[in-house]
Length: 589
Image 1 (spheres, helix red, strand yellow):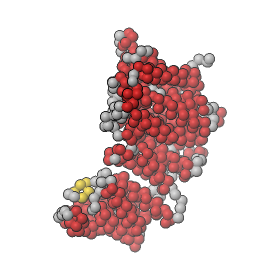
Image 2: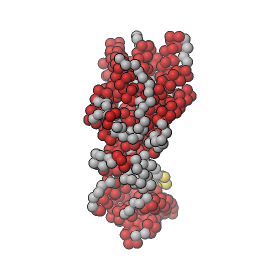
Image 3: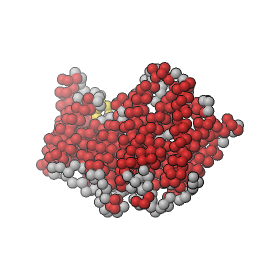
Image 4: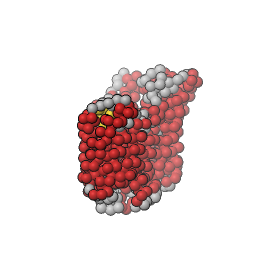
């Protein structure tokens, strides 16, 4: 058995991995992702599901969330295996070379956060062990120890860690301790009784699913950093999917079981209270180091997407130092919010990636163009605005669902919206069909912005509607603009995000703006027509007809005119600015 060696990784940085280093197969990836799917933070995430959900509901949420999240994780890894490049570099064709810097910076922040969380929870566990054995806790020294050790692993690189550490030692510890903990719980506690006990109900089921999806999603921005070393993309896909599936379901479930069986929210003392709990916790800690290794290593690889000339070992050392400082000074709080924030950013991002890679690029990148400024993937000054718009809409959808219809669950809707919007924006079809596609996207935009309104009396004023009216008038003409405003009014009212005044308030201005642009080809006249149609005509109709006839309520005509005019002027200005920006970026209509 060869000894564990620490060595600097090969310095190809973010360039495609040479075929000579494509050496990892199904077993390698099954071992890697099983090991990464196990950890104290996964325990902690499982504990968040109960008692809000009962054990039966929590188990279903764990299974469903893992199956869905794992598909996205393994698909992102599949793309990385085929192209042999890191995850953040995969986003250059999607968002543009410069556009990819945005998720790169966010990914570095989340990886530093994860790394700090890992160091903190390992140091807390080690402190309680040393307190019990030797009478002192030494939290900060343990933070330093784990930060330094995981940094050295990251300098060694993934090939060394997987082959010399995980497959020879860590994976066996993972399954051994998981089997023991499962046996202990089932042999010492009445699990069938816990299974029958209902939850308290404060956690909606699909929000629970979102909390589970967030864990595999948290690995998506770095999966290709490891899966780029695959011999075959298919074996890497299945190794990743099955390895993480088994570990995530098992440890999430154990986290929920510990909370319900032991009646505590503090997991580390709960584990220590078991017979053999100290040995179990020590072995979990030993394996936990590969999670922090992955965070530190991938933060450095992601940084090289922006600063490729800085040596990887330098960046690894810097990230490790930051994790050490944060671990010693920052408490581990708001973990649930951290998980949901990760999901809101990266679930829709990989919806855009899936649409772009499999439908726009037809399953193959022109890899040599990825590294060329002013090349195929430069787009408009380094930004692909179609991808960025689709991503932003996906994020907005996620937060809108969480705030207004949380029972729906936000992950799947945000992924679908980002996927469809990007796919529609890139359709190469005839002009009339393209207008339909634009109309669908614009309607979705109005709905996404619907939660942001100003209540004035019995109306809900929404400047975003009038912004979209001006944009629709220019892009799709009067009839499609009318259709967009009508569909948006129907959906807003169905979701209780609008009132009956949304119909005249949106439709009249959109239609007049469309005709004004068709006759003049002038953006400013289209905006003026929107202001007249909404601020004067729609407001008068609403005050004198809609309110009294349909709602049996009245408001002063002057109040309607003032409110509608303020909303349409603000929205029309935004619409003009966006159209001018699109035109400046090379977008044509």
